[in-house]
Length: 167
Image 1 (cartoon, rainbow, N blue to C red):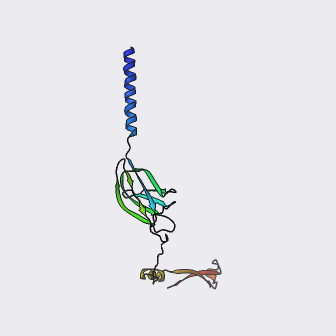
Image 2: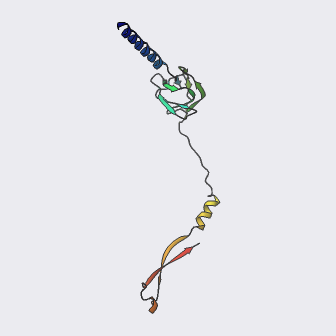
């Protein structure tokens, strides 16, 4: 009897040890790096966005006081980075592959400039289809008309409404 309980206990321990090893395996990677300006000074507080190209899922992080960012636990796949900070032009990093347990180190140098984008649109005429629709609609408005009562129309009201169409 002691022998059976010893084997059961040993079997349960081996089973639990096997499960704990399975939990330790990960299928994620991480991205880290440092953001600097053209003079080599660090850029603190920059927003780094990693976008999974296949799914479009975005994960963001902020650079710390040393200009270092760390985005962890990203599913494996192809990612592109976008880095933004006030006073700098947004910087993009070309798509790259992230593998299992890989820590991709991607440093970036930001260019000084404005982070705003101005869109200039040339004003022109509306497309003809809008004009056609505007001028073929009917505007309906009530116009009062006086009806002279006759013996046959005594039961009708003394005023009626007519509808006029303006083309």
